[in-house]
Image (cartoon, rainbow, N blue to C red; front, side, top):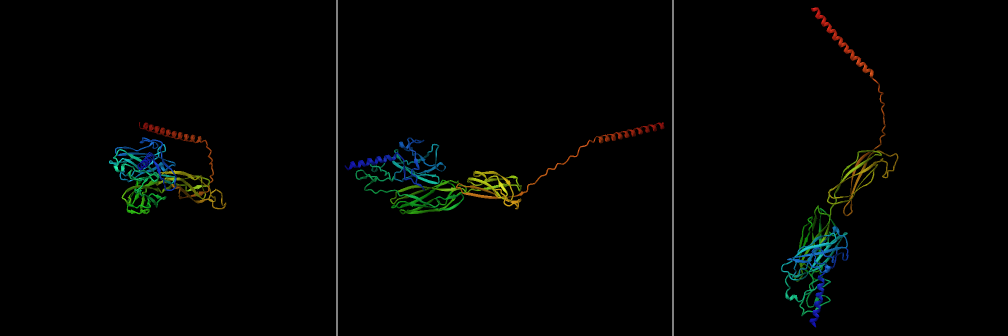
Length: 497
């Protein structure tokens, strides 16, 4: 009878164990602020590249030689920042674990069909032992200013390795569906299985102690690019009864613009429920992109029996770029006549690495009435934008609405205009700059049109006749002179003959 009862218990837990291996469960979803249930989930109905079956039909990762190919499709109920999520894997450090423990964290981009397809290759040990092993997947997503974090567990089966030792092959360990801990191994003939708790009487159960990031001094703080500030993180041993021994904490970041003074710590012991502080100065590079910067903490520790464990925690620091912009090449005439219209011209230069939003320019000044406030919209980093505002000139005794304040007050003369340049950063904070322009409003000139009378034109033909007569007379005189000289010379020749 005892053997029959034990056999029944064994079959019950074997069926429970098998059902857990063909699906991925959402385990204790948790995130940093609000608790939205099932915000992230695994797409179970469709098969994707690298999958022989969907999760609903019993998906199992494929294994070739010493590499396991894992494909997990995630979906979210809300839009994520940059359409990306962060997925990582942690392993249970059990004696016969077939995995090489490495960092498999990746940023996964949303595909066209709305799925975040996480794919990775996990290196397996050559002397791996057959059996089913858990993979703990942690998923993080930033949605509308809220960091969502959920955990999933997937069980993989190793069939191409060595068989387990005979003394442990009689009854495999089973999984408690509430705690997802390996809760017991025993010999079938000598122990009694407790079906309600999933434990084995007569044998002490050792649960893995957990560590978490309990506090982050920079949580919710925007880190300005080019700045340096003190940073402290509190790490807590969540166990109420077990101490941690031989603890090593490693801090890793893929962001080259996050400069750390220290990236590893060692503690000989952490008592149950206690906390340790990890402090250092953190520097953000001047050219750091304005986006969340994930940092991963990897914990390696042992319990009081010497069992080794590893786990990871990821936090996101928010990096922001300080906008840097200038209003340059401001130009307006030195003087303008009342009732005339002229142009204020200028250029906006974005000299920083942040985008300028809602860029506006306006003019204020006594006697100066701009047509409108100029809206330039968004100015990208490293670019410039030209603009001009049409300005109408009134008089100095007018208010902002163009109404005359005092009839007898000064109407013309020097006036000061202020050009105001404003923009917003990513957080909506408004920054303003201003420049002064000097001009003079003059009284309009009344131009008289004077038409000069033309002197009447007279007919001067008689002058031409006089000139012609004078020329003829000169020619006659010359001809007579030449004739007289000729006859005189001829008479002289005759006398000598």
